[in-house]
Length: 142
Image 1: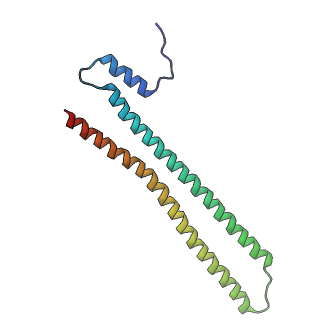
Image 2: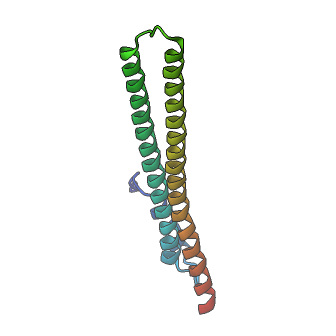
Image 3: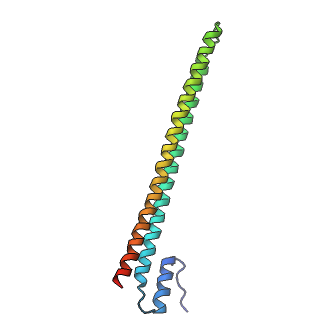
């Protein structure tokens, strides 16, 4: 008995199964095309999510490097002033700048996360709408 190749995809196996059954009024190719589109949409959505996560991690790394650079610059330029008010002013300025940067970075991270999630979900939402239209049109034909 000839051995079938191990590289058959799920779609190949399903298609062969449907054709072998020889069921009346079943368009196996249409079913395969429908599920192929679903799998393609899932793959596209996963790629969008992965790209978004990569972009987010890259930007967070940049933010961390910028922050560490600023801290290193401040530490190198630090001289203990004789006046306590001057020391307090420098510390307050650094704290304010750090807080403002943290808020800006948090907003940017939130926006990157939102965009990534929205793009990924939109791909799936579009496929669901398309699938529903395919179902409606198949019922209208009958």
